[in-house]
Length: 225
Image 1 (cartoon, rainbow, N blue to C red):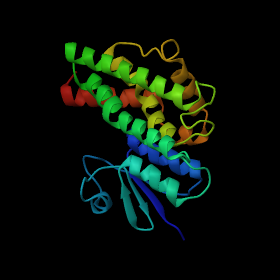
Image 2: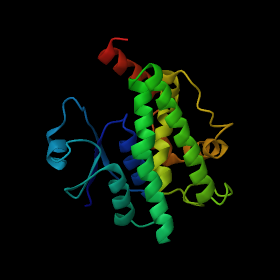
Image 3: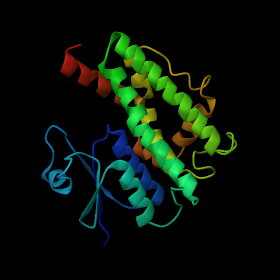
């Protein structure tokens, strides 16, 4: 009997990717919620290098780092493939997925932890990320005529980026600004709505209200705000 286990925490957009990928492939799995202030022995055993989530444990063998895990899931189970067939298109999807981890995530994190001009710069950086991803979606979806970054099919970059959507209202609340998805980034706005209709995304993403409540409670506990 094949054994698949996910070690993660519900609030992690990186862990959300793993759940969405498994759901898309129709893989049965066990989910173990981790408490990051008191990490389980299994997590420390399965990821002794970084000691962090998410971890996919497949038949006793661990796979770490969310984008690597999504690619592993794509390789390990047949059916619709997440990555495009052409080498350049595959490289492009990997590039923009890496961009979300390095640039988009960083800007969002700075909005939540910084104030004053430093936060204003973080907001400008986040909106620039939206603009760049709008352009990437236009290029990769034939000018917006196709529904996803992967064209007709929901794929690797869609899985990599859509978990951040559950954090958009939190960025807006902490930064006291509005992300103009429908007006300035209409392709991304329509893309988010399409992704949210998928069963895998509904399964993998918590409600934005729940994320915001968690973020507010965390800030109050850490900063006393």
